[in-house]
Structure formats: structure tokens, C-alpha cells
Length: 161
Image (cartoon, rainbow, N blue to C red; front, side, top):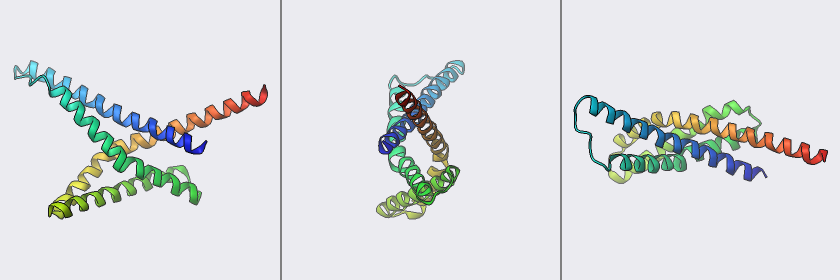
């Protein structure tokens, strides 16, 4: 049951991060479209919104799979094994995501020959990923709490019947 609830919580957190990033892109597109109309500027091509949504989907799914999921899972397991409070997961997940970003950045820099620039981009990407990391962690905690509440209610009615 623990693995199932963990998988459901991470799936819900992934859904929150991906859908929020797509919603942000759509709202940005229509804001830019309104600005272009008001400024009497060209409104762009018909494929812009579709391309922006595709980039948001690929980028947010990549961020979840490479950085957010591993860092939150690592912090969750660490706090559970060491019996630390739940709130310690936040700085642990932040440090883990920084470490993952630096590892990915140095690997990319090693392949392309410019480690300094790659590490700079890794630090910038870590700063950008702090907001999705927070959204991921909070939705993960909310979903886990709802699953635990549902299990308690289920066991209460099942045991009472």
C-alpha cells in the first residue's frame, strides 16, 4: 500500500507541475497576443501557441523526471529512515536538486567542452526550478495527506460495518 500511495502522490504532483506550466504558457501567449493587438504589432504565426505548449510539456516532463522526482523521493526516503520531521524534506530536496542540476550541467559541459558555461546554466536552471520544486513538494504532501485520510475513513467504515 505504501508504494501505491507514493506512486499516486508523485503522479499527482507531476500532473500539478506539468499542467501549471502549460497553463502559464497559455496565459502568457494570450497576454502577448493582447499586447500585440493593443500595440498594433504583428501577432505572430498560427503555430506559436502549439509550439509553446509542446515546449512547456517537454520541458516540465523533463524537469520532473530528471530533477524533481528524484530529489523529492531522495529527501522523503532520507527523512523517513532517519526519523526526521517532514519539513526537513524541503531543504534536503533543494540540496538534492542542486546536486542533480550540477551533475547534469557538468556532464553536458564535459561533452560540449565548456564546463564553466554549463555549470552557470545549471545554477540558473536550479533557480528557475525552485518554484516547480515547491509546487511539486506541496502537492506531493497534499496528496499523501488525502490518501492517508481516505485510508482512515475507509478503515473506519470497514471496521464499523
